[in-house]
Image (cartoon, rainbow, N blue to C red; front, side, top):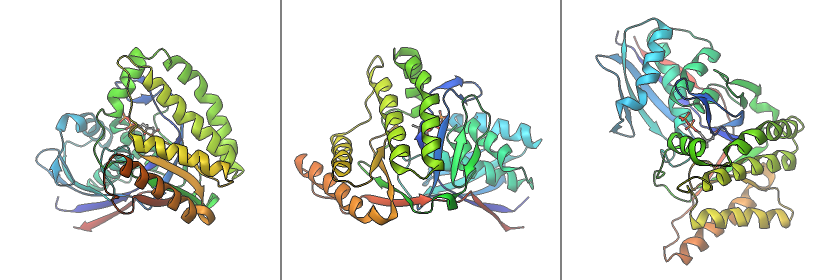
Length: 330
Ligand code: DP6
């Protein structure tokens, strides 16, 4: 079969975080997550069938063992023995805490299925992408998505048009890959953080609060729940043995800048994943002013560390679409 399939998928930014697994063999999440699929950032993947599975990301061949469970689940589901060659690029830094595995596995699942002529429903593709990375289950849908605890697939809660004025400003604190993967850090939290149980116990009420804020387009209500979610996740990480800290000085500067902006009456609510980057929820009308404040915080943190300002480091994103898939040649 000679056809090549192209897929563009968008990262899924969690406002209520998935952190911890209820079943690590099947990669089922222990906490529910609520996310927004982000336009303004994407992964593009080209897939063809091949003699052996191979994933090349940004020109670099990826470790096969990271992808093996996904490809095995894919072949079982599609009832095929075919293997796949995938070439992928991200429009943003990879493995730096920008949710690249969410758009990456979503694009891979959608493109591989199409490459063998399958028209699996989004929910089935979501379950396959989850085997690769649970956050990827959400990237199969546009708009606002929910991956319940212990669920095999995500679903769309509300379409992107529910809140087109919502913006997410991604402040790039560092383009370096994170020192420890989310998967390893999640396992460390489960096995060594005394706060892990408390984190699990608090996730349900945070989710309910965030959904209420999202449904009523109440940015403050959604933002406060999102803030508690990331803060508690990182508190559990800091309590690991040995402690895990993803933050850099510039991360702290950005968190402080958001608090200061809120005191001045601007609607800026930050969230942080497994990395030093800070993503800020706000509305389109205030986005330029908030982006300027974030850039200033980055510049002064860099100057304090003796570095030159590195140009614009703010990426503006908004609620985006489900993956787009097309067959490029028969
Ligand atoms: C902090 O989906 O990358 O971004 O399922 O082990 O591949 P695996 O983990 P992954 O973890 C994402 C964690 C997070 C929060 C989130 O996206 O919900």
